[in-house]
Image (tube, one colour):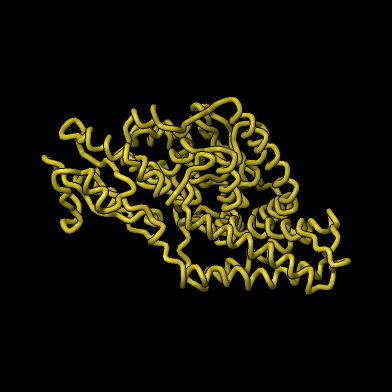
Length: 460
């Protein structure tokens, strides 16, 4: 079961889990006030408990605990929970100093952290042992069994199948079956009656050729019965978080609910960029100064700290991106652009460290303040690579309809790319962002980037 809010699809089991965790955190905050003896006259401070809850929840988002793609074992979950509670406690403790609240002391924060850790762990254990997620999944029937329908069989990961359970595939006359034979079902004379009998919630139209044998009347009757009818590309986008290029067609882009660039969105995006840039710049200035010093110590006082490079921005405009230099000065002495590779011998020792921690990207904050980039968006590429990729990959130019970003959806979902194939995979996530981007999505991406930094994912 799912619903749409803020132009994003939300799985009901996950939302229920989040609400349960939020309630557990608020309760931990209230009990901490009681056990710390800081309750004055028997009056608790719910605002303090809510503040603590918000800080921990934000940390949990940053550690990827609310991500549909989380595939950690129990030990990994416990480690992420521990780190989230620690960050949340530090955040709420800092706010306590800035905004003193009655019935809320540092001792209260420490007790709340301990109670929150046990409460969150209990919620996760209950979810894993008692809650049957299968009962919350939509029952999906695929109409088609050919090449396009085969794309559904490729959703093998548990994270990609968290929202649905496949009833089967309906073979269409003239199609060459490309799906497992055991999954092909016979609907009989009436698709409508079969859907009722199998309690199907959604039909995915996955025919190879809609011009022949399209069941218009049957699908119309099913839709009027309350069954959701979806296009294959929309279904895959919703479940996998990316736009599949091999089933994409221009008409879907034209008529889809997305790809908007209205003035309100541009204004909120700019305000968000400015606010986030100022905050990050204030926090990261000491780190940037230490990075500059480390580069000088490794390569000499005359060695440049930064390097600028041409990148392609919104609407194909060229701008100069600014980064900490992580490669040797003669890395491309022949003037030929190269992809960065794993264990690249052009990377310096300091460069390897700052790349892993993503510190080399921090000077791009100046590009954001200037307006060439956003904090969140597709990764800006070099003009040489863009020309090559545009010629080889369909719809590659569409990623330039928004500003490039320091971090982005593709960077969270796919490791560092160093080939045309990697660029193709990342484009599918970039198109998902271009279609669905909004302020809430940007905030979630920015928070989850913390996980990439802490876990060292995708750095090269």
